[in-house]
Length: 193
Image (cartoon, rainbow, N blue to C red; front, side):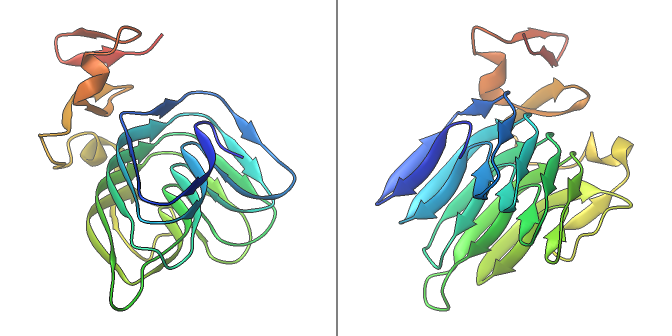
C-alpha cells in the first residue's frame, strides 16, 4: 500500500511525486511513494509527508526492493513511520542492490520519526550493495548508514542544488515544489497547501 504506487515492476522512472496523505495497512510493504519494487526503478525528486503505519517493511519513500538495481535521488521524508515488526526506515524499509549491480542513493534526508521492531532505523531498515552519498537524519535517532545532523544543521545541509532550492517547513525543498500550482514560494520559502 502506498500513497503513489503499491507495486512497481519493470523499468520505470518515478519523478516529481509527493504524498501528503497517511498510509495505513495491517500488512507489510507500505510507503509514501512505492511500497514494493520489482524491477530497475528510479525514484527522483519526490517526497512524503504522510504518516506510514504497517506491520513491517515500511518506509517514507519505498517499503521494499529485492535485489534489483534501483536509484533513489533527491528524495525526502517528513512523515512518521510506525511498524509493529521489522525492516523499517524513513527513506526505505528494505533496499538492496546486487554485488554486480549496486543500487544508488544520493541526496536524501529523513526528518520524521521511525519506530518498529528489529532493523528499524531513521534512514534505512536494511541497506546492502548500495552506493550511498549525502544521506541525512536527525541527531538522536538510530542510524547506521547516513550522517546524523542537529535539526538546524539538517535545514542547511548540502544537497544537490540541481534538485533542492528553497525550504519547506524549514527543511530543504525540491525545486519543482516552487513550480507546482499547489505550492507557493516567497523569499525562498515554499509553503504547501
